[in-house]
Image 1 (cartoon, rainbow, N blue to C red):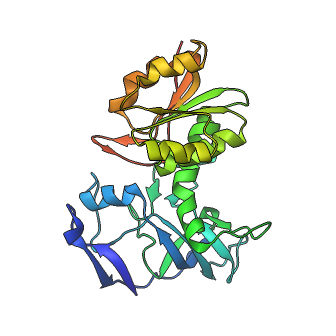
Image 2: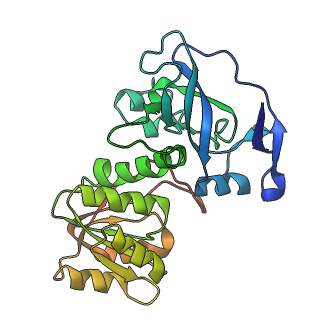
Length: 286
């Protein structure tokens, strides 16, 4: 089959359309998906630039995707050929102690499609059945492109906002860098949870769009002191939760924006390169 691959790292000169082997025989709970759409994520740029682990070249790129179930292993029960599915690209082994505790993204053998494993910019990809969700059809169906772009950023944001920060109705949350996929997903989730949402960007156009999507207050972090503005907006209490997927450049202001007992969550970081991965840990402000 023909797929988009890299044969080295460093830049787009290593990216090419090439013949790669078809996926092999399916194991008991594996599913082969015929891709209908694949989505680009910032993670794909990090993979292209090079991440600190071994690649098997040619390496098929692409983390996100959606498609039609093409074939299933003998023990698969939750999907069948012909089902329209979206893919969770984070693949644990489902057997380690973290997996048994329900912390799949902390799995000792965790891998991400397109980074550690063959990716989605190909005709087919093979994943465990646990990593598939049937695309909902009622009340409205997602288009292929929407389904393809949904999983990685939304699952990351959900784990940050709901699982780790445990954001509650009526709380105030600060979200850095609106316009990025994780930040946008966090905004929508926070509003669904009934929270008051403050967002930042250096782009007034992105801030205007964030207001259209429900942001209660917007701050241009290039022209405004974020922590001071957050304090002013919360009668000096500070935010209950800060969602920071930027890192070192915003860390100090994130801490200064937190109220007593506040929770700060961040995506996984890998040395000097930021990785979008759905494991994050809360830092509580006392």
